[in-house]
Length: 138
Image 1: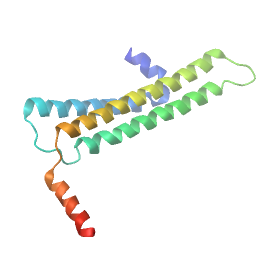
Image 2: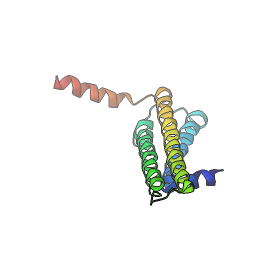
Image 3: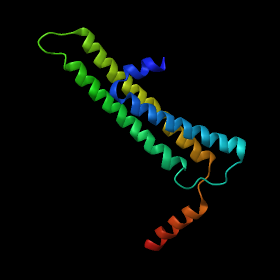
Image 4: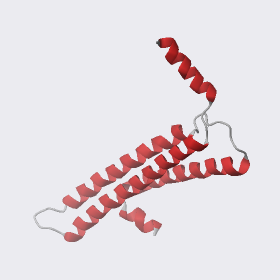
């Protein structure tokens, strides 16, 4: 089933697979360390949920849209005087599968980022420094 999805998603399937492995690996690790190891008191550094997950959401949407474009190009390149329905439908299928794959990953990334921001509080020092700079600049 996964292989069929990857074949139907076209040229962007491998990059989307890499994004999904990074995303779900990070979600699993954050959940594991929060619930089973120790309850972390703060969420800072590069591996904070917003700094790691939100760019993956943007990349997933962009790759899905790129797959749409390549699928439409493949579908409509079949118009060389006569219409081949097999090439047309396979190109449109590639466009829709890659878009759906990218959107599902993006929705999962944004939802998990929001849930992690509720569960794992941010560092108070970082917020205080930002507030101090904002107040000092006014």
